[in-house]
Length: 304
Ligand code: KMH
Ligand code: ZN
Image 1 (cartoon, rainbow, N blue to C red):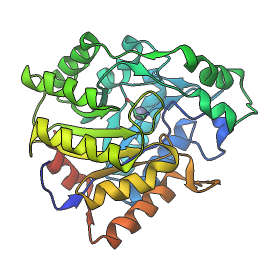
Image 2: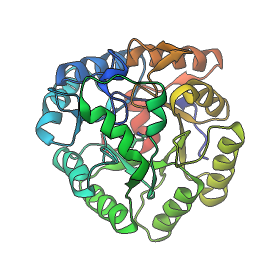
Image 3: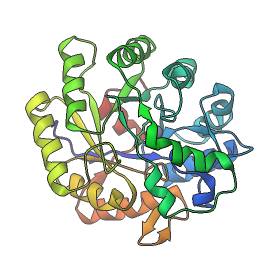
Image 4: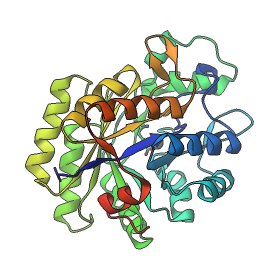
């Protein structure tokens, strides 16, 4: 893993996994997404990972017209790096998922590194009442859902994004995804250093045990040596513990309501900024410095 002095905090503001009935704090409208993102940047997030939602019902959408208003507002108020999802929701086609990143050509976009089961249905145990029927279906239908990211899909996003000057947050939900990334590195399609977002605790991917984190780290070190930037994303209650463990080992970190609705046991986070503030306090207690957006651009070799 590439050594570096400062830690890049990414905040994933709303995502496509959680639904509005699960938390009143989940941003849905363009103004809510923009305000949450700007507050997260002010709290210390150098990178803002962004999805859009239909303002009428909170359903995830990849319609570029729903991204435009919050992108404009965010760019007018912060210098933070904008990272647009190409994952969209696991329920969407790849063509649909690519639309906003191909339209806005951001500095950074996510790129999911393998096909997998994506089990959202365990959340039906915790969340039982939903304002909109799509929310229950979204969880229920994940019993028979493949999050499709074939080699052809990955290559298409990689080639078109690279042509646009976009670099990638490579979402690796399992060890095999690191090997898929190494395959694309070997073919010369990945610009160095890759930014690896290791995702822990999604049902269908690697678990959230510290041993899992160590195995990801050792495998990434073996495949990429010191030629990569590492970041940690723990889903749900694993968010802060795994980010802390990774940061102590030299990783960057990702927080935000896309990945966890919580700030403590049974306690909803009241904002994205609250989670950024929490991890920032921990980083500073570990004597780690938080990267500014321009420092993050240098660390991740972004176009700026
Ligand atoms: N929801 C995640 C666990 C994407 O948007 O491309 C990872 C993610 C995927 O953010
Ligand atoms: Zn995302």
